Structures are given as structure tokens and as C-alpha cells.
Length: 232
Image (cartoon, helix red, strand yellow):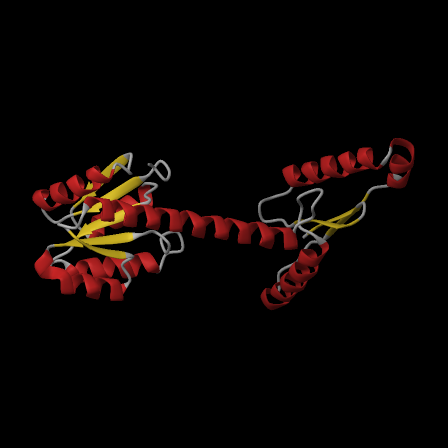
């Protein structure tokens, strides 16, 4: 059973090594797409250019250092830090798997391990990555809620206060001018009183959209409060 439409990157320093790992992966019936490369350096290019859900590597004495470097590089990148890396090794290289786990690999498996065990562990790592990503998304939503206005989606007053302080200090240091624009909607109370608060909310949303569309990427557009807006 597929966890999700998944892509695996298989790293092996020989065609035979890649074929062996590919056969193991194929037997799990998990991944919809398999990509191949010969070493960690090429793997980094694949990771930058493709949406990859797991990296599986053939591990032996001759390539252990290169794979250690790959794992270290991945741990230093935010988008790869939770990407599972699975090392496969021959039974005589069991000690290398232990060292690989200590280096930061997610899993170490013997090539002759039971296919059901391999499939179960791969599924667990994919599900765990899904959980981690869901947690990150929830954290990002909460962080955005803390700095954004719930109605208009613009930055809120708290974010404005923090930003204007930072930008004022930056302006003083650099001796460059800082522009601050305040916008207040005249007679907005009449709209609420005459047409209701839902109509007033729609007006605020429309004004916010216009301000966003007409401002520059370098501008910070905020809802200052009520019918007041500010652009830094």
C-alpha cells in the first residue's frame, strides 16, 4: 500500500550496485518513480532539481566517506533535513551501517534482509516525514497567524510596530530615508451602519487587495487597526 505518490533517489557507484538496490526497492511496491545517480555530488543536483521523498544508498568501505559527506550536506539544508536516507550494505559490512546511523542516516539495512521488513521500515520513514512536514506546516500557519490580520491577510499592528522600529534603526544607520504612509478610510462607520458589518468587511478586504497589488515587493503593507492601514 502506497503512503503517497513517492519518488526515491538510488545512489550506487556502479551499475550493478544500482541494479541491486533498485530490485530491493521494486519489491516493496511503494515508490512510483525511481531516479539514479552514481555518487553524492550528483545526488545533490538531483535533490535540488526534483521532489524526492527518500534517498537509498549502497554502502561499502570505498564510498563511506562520500556518503557521510552527503548526509552532512543534507542535514545542513532546511528542505532536506527531514528527508530519509537509507543505507544498504552487505552482511559483512554490518559495522558500516552502525557507523552510518551514528553519522545521521535514517536507517541501515542489510541487502539480504527480509523484503517485508524493508518495506515496513521504508513506509514508517515516509509516514514519519509526512508527520514532520504536517507539523512544520502547522507551525508556519500559527506563526503567520501571529503576525497577520485575520480579515485582510495583511500584516497586523504587532508586526507593524516591530518592523517600523527595525526599519527606523536601519534608516538611521545607513543615513537613507524611510517612507511611511498611513491610510484612513473616511466615512467607514457609515458603511457599517448603513449596509452592515459584512459589507464593511468586504470593503476592508478590497482595500487591502488594492494596497497589496499597488505596493512594491519591498514594501510592508499592514492593517494598522480598524479602517486604518500603513505602508512602510
